[in-house]
Amino acid sequence: MQQVRISDITMKQAGRAVDYTLTFKEKLELSKLLDRLGVSVIELEGVQQAKIDSLRIKSVAAAVRDSVVAVPVQLDRDNVRLVWNALKEARHPRLQVPAPVSPVQMEYLFHKKPSAMLEAIEDTVRACRELTEDVEFIADDATRSDAAFLHQAITAAIQAGASTVTVCDAAGSMLPQEFSSFLDGLYQAVPALRDVCLAVACSDELSMADACAVAAVCRGAREVKAAAYPVNTASLAHVSRILAARGDACGVSCLVRTTEINRILRQVAWMCQTGRSKKSPFDNGVQDREEGIALTGHDDMAAVLREVEKLGYDLSEEDGQKVFEAFTAIAKRKDSVSSRELDAIVASAAMQVPPTYRIESYVIHSSNVITATAHMRLRRGEDLLESVCAGDGPVDASFLAIEQILGRHYELDDFQIRAVTEGREAMGEAVVKLRSNGKLYSGRGISTDIIGSSIMAYINALNKIVYEEEEG
Image (cartoon, rainbow, N blue to C red; front, side, top):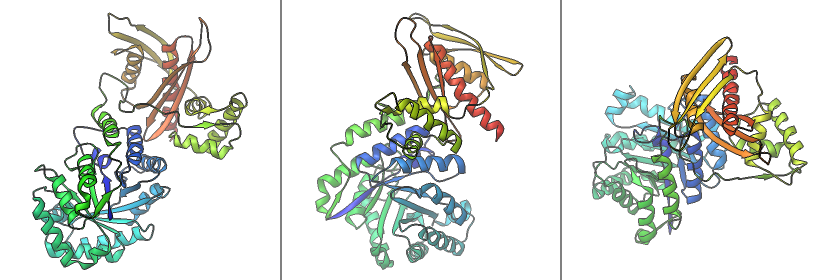
């Protein structure tokens, strides 16, 4: 019995969807959930902004253990190298070469003649094959292409080294039997297609994507592009359940763990449906943060910095040394150091910079009968900046007031509060993690006033961002 791979495109489609977006942290958490579910391939967006997107790909590649991580490249050797440098540390990397094969997309969107497109496909696939054996050619809008040209494009891609060929029904206008006949025609015209993995991607314009995908599997397709969250394509839940129940009719099986699918897809839906409110500084979507690690005094610097990198930080050599020294001092007094404690170490030891913004004063009004408000006054040089904002709570209002002063929003990756001393005048510690241009910055604040420590932590992280942006 042959296996059918499910390739999830939820994250790739997030950038194009109008009804949901995913933050950097949510994409990282989503990749872990899909990996745990047994999805064969996890597809990411390509590289548009080199620094931001490369860090995103590297972070997901480090988090995924069993699934293939697939990233598209442009029809350009320089872009191939850029994407590969971000992806190469993945346990199972795949480079994808999407190319338009319909006349409309080739000439009007990409401004290429058929002969030039064939040459670009062959050259790009060959460049990818020089770097990895797992190369996928994606024939965009295949069902509306000229049949002879489509056959030439697929043949050229296979000869150049593509191990997977995907044909896309972007219009979503075919019925299952029509799509089956279309695939039969491909196998007859391109015999070499039987030597590689045929994959399909079906639009759900007629609500037939699931049926077309299953029909394709019965005709020999061994990979299906689907989504864990509805994005006008085949449903991961539906296709995997159909294959689990009736795969024997086509002589196939599927590796997706259908026993866990409901629980995990509920978490995925929660992340996708819980967008950021303009009335809150918090970026929602990640539940049940795991402690993850337990380092001890026996761990060396390399081990500690690997865990720091997994948390999302990109430290310089100097800051890495400072973090390890601070870790060593704490590890001598404790049996183990958790990820939350490592976050606090990074916040207090790494990238300490001269403060650009200083807290002049803050006034908080909050009770169970009024909306919380914050009057924030910050000083930058000789300038006194202030704002008043309402929020869902005192911390919410305080962070919104700071954002209003700055005139921009930074992705609030994490916010932690804990007591560091006991008693009536106990000290509270807050750690705030902000993300700017894909990079993570953490700040730490300590005060007997937990709101004050939260504001200090935010300003501490903010100053690191501003310092690096101005120095850069």
